[in-house]
Image 1: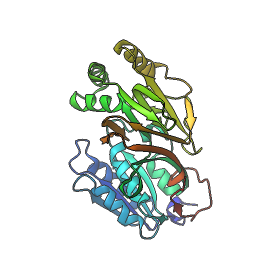
Image 2: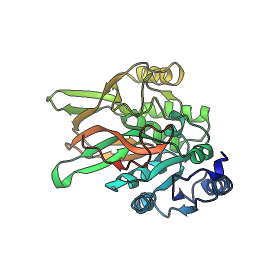
Image 3: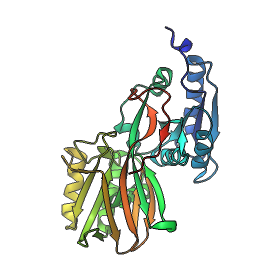
Image 4: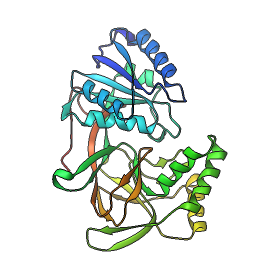
Length: 314
């Protein structure tokens, strides 16, 4: 059967992009719209530029509330994080999300091999993947956010800021990361049992590789209800440099896998979530859980077509 005559799963496709990005996502979005128009002419496609930080989340939330849209983030990990959180803002939705890589690291794209995006759209196959759900605070003051790939404290936000401050390109970025190790500050957490631990780095990951070059785990199935915990206790700078070198060469090997991780930080600390850096408040409880198969995305179908996405109660 000709692909263009196949029944369409999506009633429309929305391509969300940041028009001021240096990587020209508008051109990529326009190219994808042309491909979809030729291959699946019965499905309307709309380009939607975002206007300011957080706007992509609002656009995705509005789209996910109506019908059966495919919402494509033409972006890197940070832009896709906004779209994912916009979809998850809707309690029950038939929306499907995807990313057309247009960022610097593109960790989610690199860790989820699939056919070219246009082919995945034509096939219309959908799978569900886990998300990391971070909740900071308690009761009415609690703040919740989802990550599609990883949450990192210590080394990862330092690396992100180092790459942002430096020049792009593999060698130059690695040099920038090396320089950030000199400024790396250890942080202390208190676990639920009252024990304290001091880390240079703590990563909770739903993917096996982050920061473009670092392979942090040999496992990392994105739909098994578990995530990897990569802990690096406080050490000398040269030990951290060796760990970073190992991550970008042979990888860090098999890691602890859990469905829940909770702690408190003693001081405010930077946190990186899917490429975006934010701050965790001091002495506030933090709980990260695996929201099992919470997000519908393009890929091999794993459950009957038409099943709505539901937010998991973990």
